[in-house]
Image (cartoon, rainbow, N blue to C red; front, top):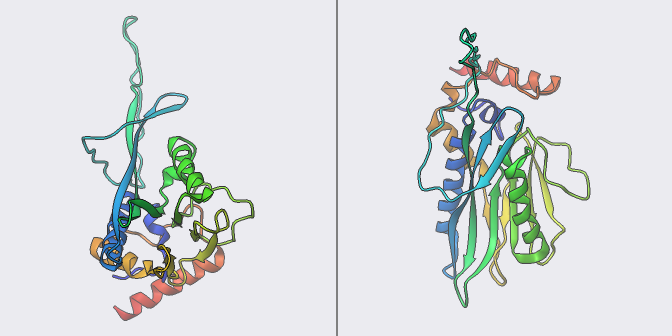
Length: 265
């Protein structure tokens, strides 16, 4: 089954599979760049990783370098409710334990290897942790600010409807998603391209160093390949509303898309 959305599918964000999708998209982009780069460059992935400790009234976090991976099952729409047992003994009490969650934010970087090693372009596919209060919202902007001061080129891809967008002087365009390209020589001025779920995502340039031309990154075929390979279509219930909800016009468009899909099956 194909996604009913021609562009980014917002049900990926809403159905607890974002970490799976994000990791696969980073891998697809890295492989494509590696095949397309001129010989004077190389590409590698990086990771920001830290723990969040969830308590009663607040969350505390600290950075660390992981050496063990943790598996978190996909979120479901049915949430279990914890019920505290009544204390019948004066010497017995009910307490809540701290729960730690590992946050990983993967990114891609293109380096020049000749005549000397240097960062050329950083590609970030934003995660929910970058758009919500907490450590991720503080760590990534530090790197972003350094790049926007002219350290290197920045490509920022936001395929999330939820959360707060990165700070800009001018207001963001009214669209579900955006693709930002900040060239080192023009920073902090950025080229921002609107992206939607009703039409394919536009191609974006990946700047290299003169005299090499930009690479042209096509995200839409990668997203469609991941969707098909991961069988997301069998896992999503498109009859359930989204949060935030689609507009009436978009909801009517989605209903028409689903009806057309059923008609050709």
